[in-house]
Length: 295
Image 1 (cartoon, rainbow, N blue to C red):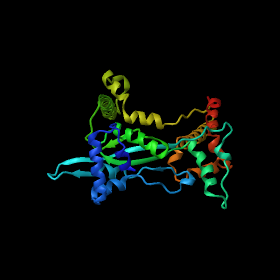
Image 2 (image 1 turned 60 degrees about the vertical axis):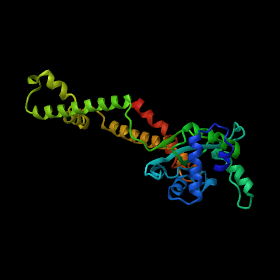
Image 3 (image 1 turned 90 degrees about the vertical axis):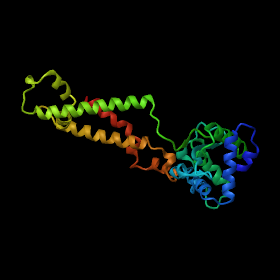
Image 4 (image 1 turned 135 degrees about the vertical axis):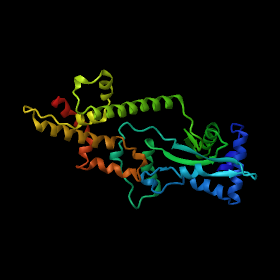
């Protein structure tokens, strides 16, 4: 496919990218180590596609470590990892469609029926792959290649981002966050030292300067967080309800924030919705209701 895309180039791809791609193709035909490593780092069609496995990220670290050296020892280009999102052009989804009620093909049916049924999942999912290309190709070059690939494979192919190994450059937001965290860490350290030194001194004898830093003391704040109230009129059973509700809430959010497309055979997760024990997860939104009562 790559030579076909390059031969049909309409000048939307830079000459540097075109030249690097040609060297990549030449490296593959001559079985060079660097080119084979780039090919090996590129995603392959994942196994278990009919079970919803549409993700294979390839070798991210391996791609970034690839180097194509010149004869004088300099590096001409490196490996660049580009994320690919591909989705077939699908018909409109029926208003009453539900993956939980989606049927399965029978063993004696033709593969066309299996593709028809399993393909409905592509209304919600998309192929997520990774390709390793020369670093001479910019994101704009790869997006132009993706646009031409969309015409060849009849799919909506997008490349949202590319990554290459480079020196870390601190942006103003990074410097601001690091500075703020450093100030807080310094205040916590100074406050802890003052708090330890003032263990046997009453609070009235402390200067305002020391009182200010003791507010950041890890010792005092840890004791406040870990201490339990000892009121005689409180209902201790309410603390148990709070703990159970918090555990239920965290359990529900653990499943809510799962990216199901990254699972192996995610179509099997449809069975979960019909299981009695999974109702605890499906109804996890009710876990916040006890807090309104306990308030």
